Length: 272
Image 1 (cartoon, rainbow, N blue to C red):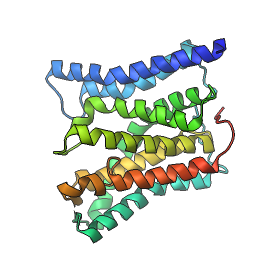
Image 2: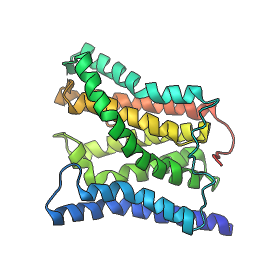
Image 3: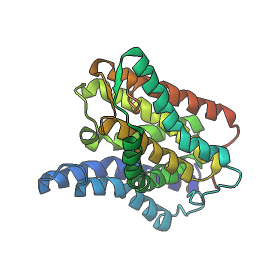
């Protein structure tokens, strides 16, 4: 391995260690402060630390900014941006439709109240996902791509580390009676499927912004449906019919779309 490649791999490992540890540090902060609900200081540490680590590695550890993917590159990328906006609303519509038709899901949808709730959620979701995506798709994915590894294996590696990053605060964001021993493996499959999809968008556009838009739309659209009780998936069918990443239908459809995008691309991955 060349000196530059060795440095890149070292920095990617440092980033991964920081990402996998910062949430547990945040949990300790929350427990010490006696505050463990949504919006805590520990969660801020968890969300911001990967991005701060990325800045340190790019500025002071020799990674530079060439593959940061900050430019929107909208020109010539109309389809990826449209896909980013529509994917999760269409995914949720299909899954909820199947759930309603099969008796797995109940809905109490009012278009005006749902649109109001979605409108309240989209800006915070966008801000949150700027932090998240510019860490994962703005740093870890392009740094691993630059080493010349098989890009599908890179997607999987990013997905595994990204999924494990969620563990410390999973219990706050997930309302389920299911055992974590069965929930977490499905959640990880869903995150890996999304890592393929987001990673392919990154390679297609050489910009992180389509992934930011898609992630923000997914969180705002689907989380609003679930957390605001616009839909209720019967507990015995939640593992299949939840439109969130741990649902089998969501995993399958996201995985198929990611595989389709992966098959469309050939050659060495690069966003520089």
